[in-house]
Image (cartoon, rainbow, N blue to C red; front, side, top):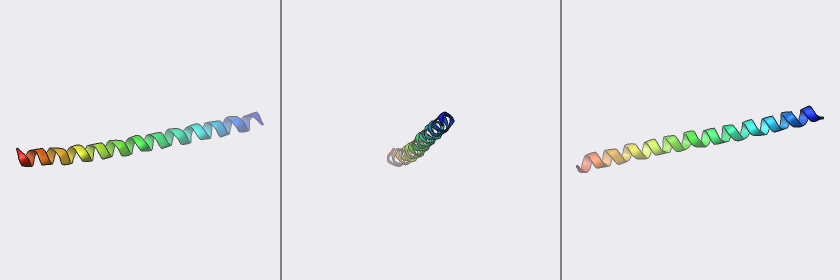
Length: 46
């Protein structure tokens, strides 16, 4: 019984970490895209 609980907890933690990781990756890609378009606009107007 106790091992089952441990496995469930481990599974939940790994799922949470994966979700956080994917959010971070998405944020990073979003920010890099925004920065890219910003630099393009700045270069165009300068």
